[in-house]
Amino acid sequence: MTVIHDLDSWRHPINFNEQRLQKVLANLNQSDGIIVHSKPMQARLEQDFRAHGLEHQPYFVILDLFGFQAVRNQYDWQHPFNREIDYAGNLAKAQFIKELSTDLKFNIYGQTDAADLSDQQRQNIKFQGSYDHEAIPQVLTGSFGLVWSSDSYPGVTGLTGEYEQYNAPHKASMYLAADEPLIVARQAAIAPFVEKHGIGLVVDDLSQLKEAIDQLSEAEYHEMAERTHRIGNLIRQNFPIKRAVIEMVAKLEWN
Image (tube, rainbow, N blue to C red; front, top):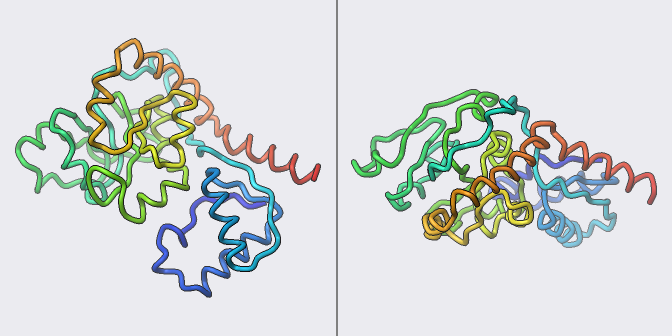
């Protein structure tokens, strides 16, 4: 059984010539079962196996999301509906934030540099500094966690953006472990999960973000937050991988 954490051959294809890619796929195809992030990841792997003449087809189980170990106060967990958006990451890798409406307020967690922001952007983008992996779910103060990778605004472009069509970002699990509803791109692999469980906003591109938030009432947000809290409990208990392993063992034993 193999659990895929990341596929660097998809994230950084320039580093993989045909021979190296063939070796990666051959090694994966030796497994009896593969736990993948999403249905699109499964479909592309199956396509890659066929394209490289690999006849053995392993069983697949969909993970959906990774777990994220965190401790939360079960009596004071709900985020305020302040319409602020949290983004944990390096602003150098998220230049699209500078192009967003200045009517939106952002809290940036991570290694950041505000030197090239305009005065107005400085008012709307608040740098909160860096925190340890386990501490982040305790310090997020916004209403939503932004899961977005793109080289430009407003759509999703670049290799990291393309990769999110297949993967389950750890950033999403981190926000959910903090009981924080998500904002994701419609093309992202996790978008169907977010919509199905009603745990965030799904937008075609970032130009729709302000309108999507403005249309949400406080009551609707609190209902969304309740659903997010239920999923967050499962994320903090690392339930997704436990469920996926049990499902895979059943497939391997009975097929």
